[in-house]
Length: 341
Image (cartoon, rainbow, N blue to C red):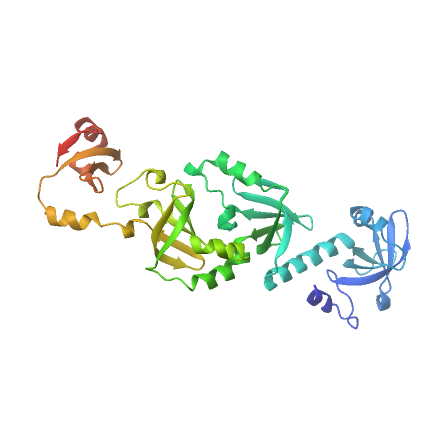
């Protein structure tokens, strides 16, 4: 805001679009007059007056306000001003400063949709996407049910959250907020104590259709001390060597497990449970060789072919090209039946 106002040096003639400070010297039923010092007298009237009528009621003679110059000289010789446009410019300038300084702001959540939380900052709509929530606030809904996700998000309505401004778009009046950004630096510092390959213990804190979230047990003490909780994701493909449809086949919420860190990117941690399990492919390679006939149970079809379970942990794919078409494949094979391949 300071930089914006410094642009309007009092020694320079005013320009349309600039913000200027003036002192109220007169108030009428539909107009307000401002003393602009060496730049004569300014006036707020017409639609610009009615746009801020309620605000002007609280102002008195002698009060100073900021206004934007709309016209350097109207028909009556006054500099035509806008209080509402100046306020809007100053608000956006202030928001830019807050973003650049990484300032944490407190906002009240006013609404929710399946994509995130809705609020306002200085009457400007603002949005907090689900992806920008802290792990402990992320709606970990099994199956990714959008109705259940919305219900979880609606629990935040009326609550105050400490957030940072993630992005600003003045042209579309859009503010995107982030809760994760508030703790990102702290989390990065804590993660310096970990490296890829470390085995860590934790508790399953949430399950979705794409995997399971695990809260690091040491992070609980950090959270109590005011530090951020650490959570990592075990992708469904990293839960077990066998192909699974539902993460709850392997883990349950509240279950304590050990996992291996397989990636740390920024403040995101990727974990693997199967990395601590014996690799069944090693045994399979010793038992079978190319060209061997194997017996297996058909578990499912997809556009690429049929999945066949050879051992409890290993499944193979019989490619669709072996049958010609999906229809022929489904005529020759039945799910749940065993065949030699």
